[in-house]
Length: 293
Image 1 (cartoon, rainbow, N blue to C red):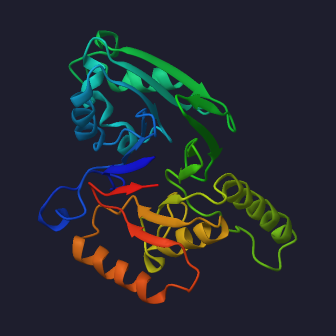
Image 2 (image 1 turned 120 degrees about the vertical axis):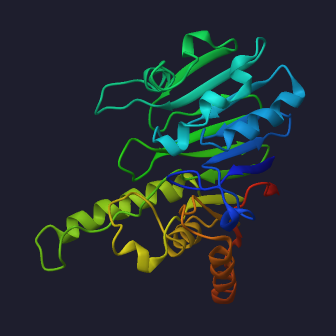
């Protein structure tokens, strides 16, 4: 199984001289199974070059698993070339929105209404099938098994685990470690702490022992002070989760759009210097990074 990163930014695409080495496209990860089946995780702006690459083996057949429908994770879908080509087959998976009572097709189709985009969803030429997932539902796709777990973000967000022939990877999507809203002397502090522990245990149990743990690390710890509740994690919290899940390797992604290449280099150097003896291997995601499992 091979994992390739096509988009590694969070919130908004950030091309420019300060993001050349790590890349400025938003989230998109391609997983190629041993049999050559293609699974795409999220449809940020990185899915445009991913789609062009997939077209080298037309007709394209792939699964697209959407962690959630915030713009930086779906905005590239209208530029995903296989959707416009007859003979292509695309299965799109994601969550139902319980707040607005919309399924995945409704949300993605709305993004392609004429007021936003010149080609409507109805005009796509590929065979496009939409699948609304329940939490914990397991998908068998070609020679891979795809499982999901609910993460902590201000919209329904699934983390996905992909297994294939004894190899595995987990992608968190956007995730902020839950924090206790009660003070330690409050009656409800212990009860709420138990809820938080159970939530993280559920995530780590699904990701237990994966070969690659890909985690949202948009912020540093000092930045997190003023961004609590925005739905993202830090390098420290991501590493802690990877340790708890006993992952063999961890890859930090969803870089803040203001984070420069040089700043990411310094973070990578700091992580390397502070690593413990039995820590998982660590990667800072960049466009074009390929990891063979």
